[in-house]
Image 1 (tube, rainbow, N blue to C red):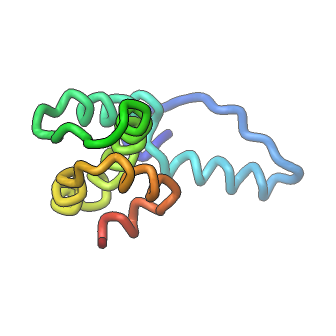
Image 2 (cartoon, helix red, strand yellow):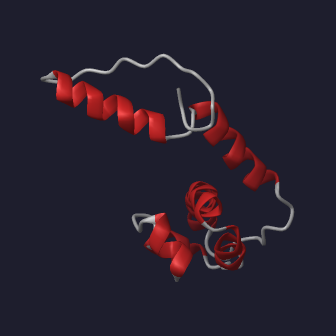
Length: 107
């Protein structure tokens, strides 16, 4: 059972029972893939998101990064997500692609 309330069957393996228990607990703390995809689609369809500035390749790459990061930040802090969504430089999103969303929400 995921934290969003949706049940889903997963293959959980490990070297010992403790590994399997940790993996099962980690999956239980996450939202199911359907809810995660719905969050990302909602952000993409959001007309309030400004267009990104940069080369066409940068913009395409940064839009994917922005979609994923904003979905994670919105779950942490919706106000911070609105603040971070205002960034229109594609390079900014690409440079911060590996930054933890918790830190992006506080920046």
